[in-house]
Image (tube, rainbow, N blue to C red; front, side, top):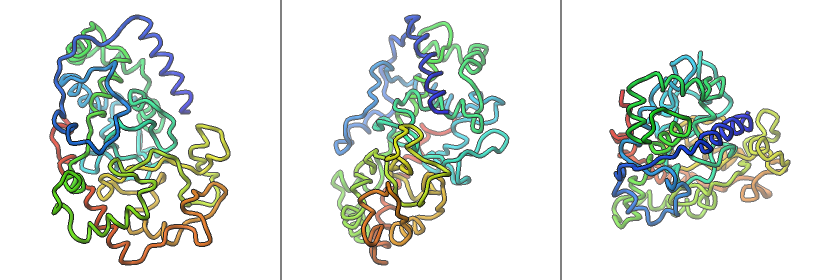
Length: 348
């Protein structure tokens, strides 16, 4: 499915580029100007807006599209239907994706934040470019069930959208490249870097409680190899011992066809993890206590189990006190400004 979607988008993109249609003369306004200067402990972003100059009108158009159900087949589902801001753009209500006619997918809706730093997306890494990300849910029959040609026709029939696209891309009609670049301007600016942890890193030593500081030490010793600060992911794919076989979902192997990738899923960021349950690729855990119990006592062995979790006693040794300290530290990754920022809210 992912490969088919990829081919469809590549075909459309080739047609657009071949016609010589490119963005030009953007207005030089950065919506999150000032935030980036505080990110010295982040690596360089992967997505740099090189061919998609960031502007306020582009960002606002992307936000409108993100929340508009016009992108779904029957006009009932928007990106924001599953990616809710108060839940760090995850979905608290469903363990797996929930789309058209109450249909359910197979994987948990991931939280969205700091996407510009991602070299790949989705639990299996099936997409490796920010501008391609929306194509998968838009065309997935159990999520938004639409197709790009249909969406472009609808947008070109809407005088308001034609005017807004013209302000951003200076073309008389809407095309697929403009659609995905506008969405990338919004999603690329979903930057979460204002949690108490960030304040602590930036020199405010009292931003963390004493228990959270102890939790940070436990985290650095036992969790940071995979959840690398400050993005709190290393973007790798790992088998974290949820299952002993992978008949239900082979994970990364779907993309690479390599047996060594069976049962491996992307290491998610832990930013805003306290407000973005449920957890794991299939949303099986509702609480972080359950997650820690899994790593302490529930890890199942298999041929591809991550070496960091393997051994005579699989998993991560955690005392009750360490679990308590870890939970306290994870609270320090909750970015309340991010999940209430009106710039990211539904404009309708």
